[in-house]
Amino acid sequence: MPQYRDARRALLATAFALTLTAAGATVATAAPHPPYALRLDGAGECTFPMKKQIADRPWALQRLLLDELWAQTKGKDKNGASVRVAVIDTGVDRANPQLSGAIDVGAGKDFVDPKGGDGTTDTVGHGTKVAGLIAARPQEGTGFVGLAPDATLIPIRQNDGQGKGNALSLSQAIDHAVAKGAQVINISQDTDVQMSADSELAKSVQKAVAANIVVVASAGNDGMNGQKRKTYPAAFPGVLAVGASDRNNERAVFSQPGDFIAVAAPGVDMVSTVPGFGQCIDNGTSFSAPYVAGLAALLRAEHADWSAQQIVWQIQNTAERAVNGRDDYVGWGVVDPVRAVSQDQEAPKAPVPDPGPPPATAPQAAPLQLTETAQERQERYGTYALGIGAVLIAVIAGTATVVRDARSRRRRLQ
Image (cartoon, rainbow, N blue to C red; front, side):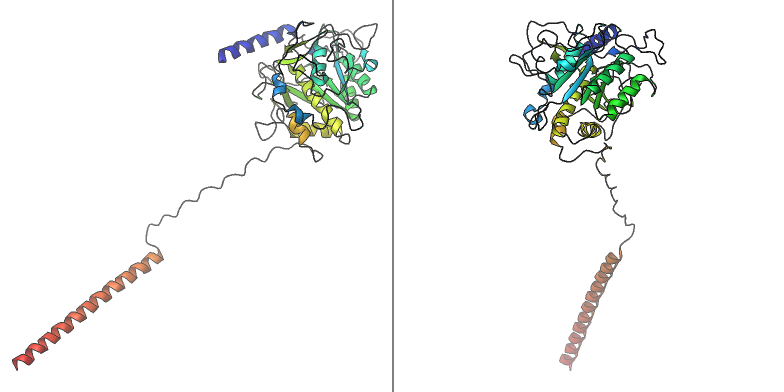
């Protein structure tokens, strides 16, 4: 019902306004570029642990033919090695049974706790939800599963949702992911403070891109007013920036638009894992990005010879578009995971606008004849000739008859 949808959108807007930390907050430092605080791109609508599981298959998975999606791989390459995906977030809780077998604890790191740690502490729940969308293992009692359930997660706790996560710690977390062999990095947080190419964060992102890593980042949730602006790290060159789409493959009302958006992915009513046990439903571009990161993991597993850039191109080229090219709302379109893994016979190239249907040929108006044509004139003349000839024949015949009759009368009189 339209009224219900409008009310629901208003509630979502309120939730985002209440839960997202303000952009631009700074921490006192002597560094040349202040470590701007980063906000998490989820609505924070979940509690945990859950007593019950969500039994049904989530809508974002119902639209996929999972047998086709996993026909070649679920996240392991041809040698049986799992693709390594770094989750830079609030931590990944390994107590949830859907994640306990997915985490490389030894590769994890905690940048929030001064005492350090392995990144498996998550007091917020945000990072655990992000991780589940990428690589949650199947479990009896729930229809939820990650897009790449054989991938391996590198848990990196960098944000506590209370302002401790900033651009400097994110830069350090990215460097750690590179050092631990990440093939895909997911970042579901942002700031709209403009950042220069010589910032520490920009440099770390470029190091990751140069290391042939697919870097996926959420676009942010401040799009309610439709104002276009860049958010970081999503807007850095080489980053696959992901907006949120709804059930109709349209931009979710909260998703940040801008000229940096590469693709969109489901971001409303997203089911995923929570710390401890179970699953919950949440909203935000935070949960669109890992949907794409999971797809990137599948492509990396299947095509070890493809570069990170080619993986990005494949995701963009196979996205479902409502326009011939890209736009600032859903980028090159809403990702189509099954199409991305099945239409992969050739190495992808940079996306280009669809040519669209050929222009229709303008109809040719029939020539308007204001006078008769030459053929019609000849036919008319022929008709006249026949008519005149017939009259002449009739006259001659009549004359001959009269002459004959007159001669006959004269003979009788003689």
